[in-house]
Length: 173
Image 1 (cartoon, rainbow, N blue to C red):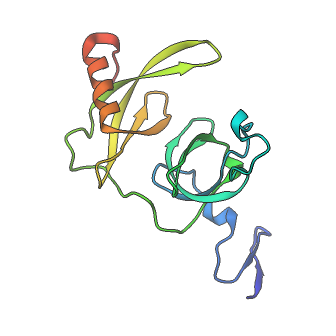
Image 2 (cartoon, rainbow, N blue to C red; image 1 turned 120 degrees about the vertical axis):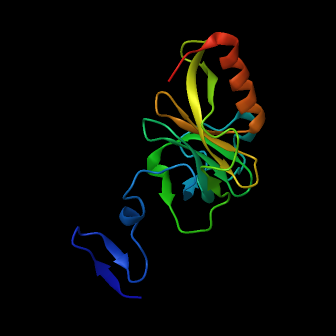
């Protein structure tokens, strides 16, 4: 393999895209990634002193994007991690775990109310969201919050949010 240096000075091997090229656009829900599992989080008590896979990169798929650049990742082994810091996530070319569709389901376009517990305030916060996509297997729905955060929810979570909204707990666009 020959080593190439691009105009921007990024070193890469011929035939492979550099990390800078793979991450040129912001990460989006559905992107295939390699993410470092539990890289910036303290280990739970029951795992202290034991090998838990933390600190290693694993294949996964972005299922949520936050305004600060952090992403939620579903890993290929079924684990989930919320708010992975961008420096520990790299877009890859492996096949995606789920195919997202933006049409073909009755819930697309529906508004709902999301309730999130904010630990720093020790209180729940409610905000509006809209369903924009779903997986072909019907297991997850991609929602965009009114504050531009994104996440993937189950159908049961979507219906719970729709009922919350219909109860008059929230108004929104």
